[in-house]
Image 1 (tube, rainbow, N blue to C red):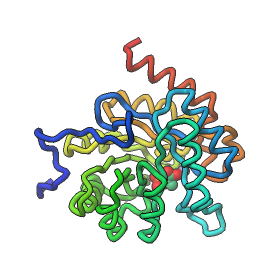
Image 2 (tube, protein in one colour; image 1 turned 60 degrees about the horizontal axis):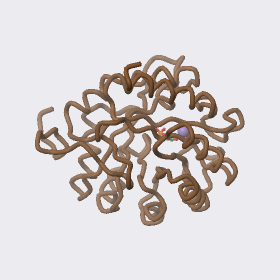
Image 3 (cartoon, helix red, strand yellow; image 1 turned 135 degrees about the vertical axis):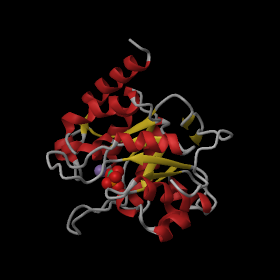
Length: 268
Ligand code: PEP
Ligand code: MN
């Protein structure tokens, strides 16, 4: 990298970002964020939240505003989805992360969510990134699926220079010639992002491969590589999911993964 950025690693700075009381990303212990791709119903999000909490997840995910490839696909429940996420947080104590797609919705989403996710498709949305500089909440910045490492770090710079230093980077897979997997999880760039910046870096193995059977091994690899956490799609009935069911773990498989991760981190 030629130009020194505000996000460039600086020995005097901490990587830790407190997302909510008791939940810090980049503080040493890896953070696991889990939940469905989309909030679909009260019953679904409450069941998912309870299951991931019982398995040991630290935060709940769920999209209310969904960036879908087709305009005919489920677009999310909007504000009703945000209300349901807040209800799931109250029921479980898990802080929530959800996607922000539109500048006009920032105040609304920030009033419900603990962490605002910028999706892969919006990583290059510079007005949105600039506006998030003043949102007052931490931002989870996903890597664009065709973005270089440098473009990704500069996207983070937009939020930081706008006044918000609380940016968590998320590697979620890039588009390559490989078609067996939906995307190619680029752990090399994720590790490089940690070496080059003072920001926490997590991985999204669900979008990173698009195949349920690959999610757990890639989650283990992400933490073994020293990343600060993972975000994983989990649903009580993945085959009925309204989005991303193919890459979504049933709650039983998520619980098994959490047990594996605990074993690995204790060296057992
Ligand atoms: C998601 O998290 O469900 C999502 C849409 O992610 P991405 O922006 O990485 O595709
Ligand atoms: Mn998804």
